[in-house]
Length: 357
Image 1 (cartoon, rainbow, N blue to C red):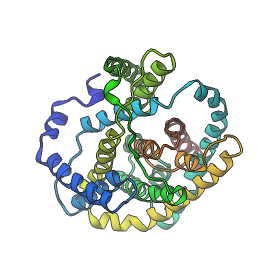
Image 2: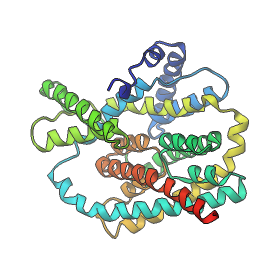
Image 3: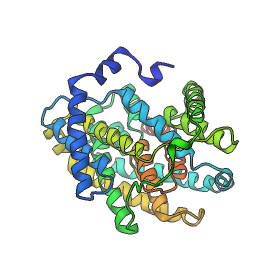
């Protein structure tokens, strides 16, 4: 259980390390400056861009896993507040959008992998892992087992994540004119704080269960399930301060930047062009999938676009919360996407192996 929360000596020591202190020193001012210039999702984009630059220029940076674990619980509690009985009534329609998601993933992998093989010189296996629209962490484990070039896979996904997280907030703002994180006047101190303790205990329990049965993103999905269950049964509910999302944005943004710590500028430059093209293809296919989904669910098109975007599950979830774009719908579809990717990629690899024989 402790391992799931990364409560090992190394992770705890990293919290007090100069590498993490450097990340905080870079991230907070960059977030404030970005916010001053009204950049969408300033608390994510500012730290992400500046930490990426710092990492690529050789500054030693690190994002402790325990810090990431803490924000996933916060995200789960936030999204859980959107769950009610009406949501369960709508979920029957999500079967069709889940089917669309599966088809979208298969088409993405087949088309983008062919592009990467033909124009970037990627091996067949590396191109398939690089073409999958998300699930970088689990895919890296699968890629290592398949003796695939991990550098190519990681670099492709990181460049894509950087592009998606940078572009999406501007698209949302330009199409809605809405600002992220408009703080309300809710009286947080008047709540029953014992409910928060109960929610955390329930979250830890379901995180443990979900991890044991290998549910993807157990930290987020376990907390989300616990929060939703206790709220819909009127056992406990608790609204976290909206400002806590800024903390999540900062940590997630900086964590993306820290992933470039083991990359070189040359390595990024060599993969940039093909990664941009691959990302463009994935986004276009996602837009088509989102449009098709409008025939099956009565949901905001921006919510559907976010649901079918090839970004990271946690980064996209926090964007959905920040712009109030049906976070439960978005989180559900990204968890489903993660499941489908882990299911389809090994099958595609085995089918291709059999075809070659």
